[in-house]
Amino acid sequence: MGLVLLARDSRASGIPQGRPAGASDVASLAPAEKTSAVRAATAGARRAHANHALEVEVESTKVESCGATASEPDAASDLVAIKVLKPNLLNDPCALACFGHEARLMRHLEHPNILQVISISENSTRPYLVVPYIEGGNLAHWTQHGRPLPTDLILKSVQQIAAALDYAHRRGITHRDLKPANVLLNADGRTFLADFGLSRTFFNDAVIDFGRAKGEGTAPYMSPAVARGEAEDTRCDIYSFGALLYEMLTGRPPFTGNTKDEVVKQVLAGPPSPILEINPRAPRGLVTVCEGAMGRELRGRYACMGDVLSDLALVSRGVKPAGAGSRCKQRKRLVDGRVFGATRQSLSVC
Image 1 (cartoon, helix red, strand yellow):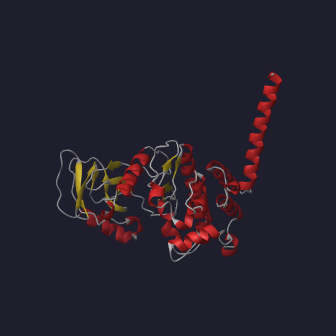
Image 2: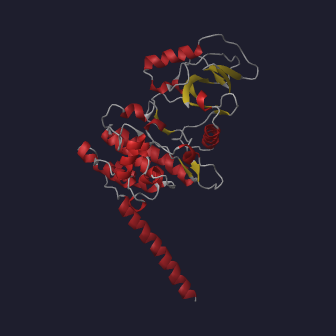
Image 3: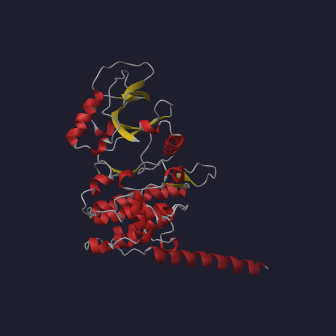
């Protein structure tokens, strides 16, 4: 799948026609290149359509986008991007199903840190999504230089990512492909979680497991259980969140290799090199959260993103986080206390 910078989102009476710069991630371009891409996308003949539909030729394939205007924008907030399916996947039933699944799912997720879907087309010619264009690009472009990110940026970003995941998890949805390329940042530091193509709805037992059909997740960020080919619940996202935080703190992924198989072997052998050995200046609180999120076994990992959010809130206030192990013990005492109380009450009734 690719992103094509296309248009200003409007309902103008005259709908111009243009030719995008191709199915590529325009967010990766330098500012001058972005401007050129926009101009290239808006060059060509223009004509109005009474039904406010836009015909755009994308890699020699015409698609329709209702209510989008391929004109040269004067405000970044007006830009939209078209996410299209790669030509070689158009005859792949699983890829088509995955694309449609993502489109419908994202349409129903409304959270300030989840990328919203503006428009959807699942036509057989070329299915696509229309989403807001996030000018800051994705997190992969920030981490590619091999240096740790500024602490303020890390803390602000991971709190927003955690909030988005917590929102999705509470609705029975797990992302399953959390990685830097799927985290977008705009100019004012707002973070957006994108690409739910491999997500799974746990409240629906009949849902197609697209991830297991196509290879779930991205190797450096997948949990050991997923790397072994096992099914895992929302806590696979918690591990991937930790791997993402690891890269932000160290400037490199937790596991690397020349091939996916090499990386998977490292994930299975784990754990990764200690963060403080790579970056002695890494904030201790964030290191604690990262280690708790990347627990290799579920008993050593945060139980839910709500716990992660609670610890991140402590870190933001300069307070030592409880950590995954401590929170698991607190949760067990709370559950045991409730069970004991209920048992004592039932005995007194008898």
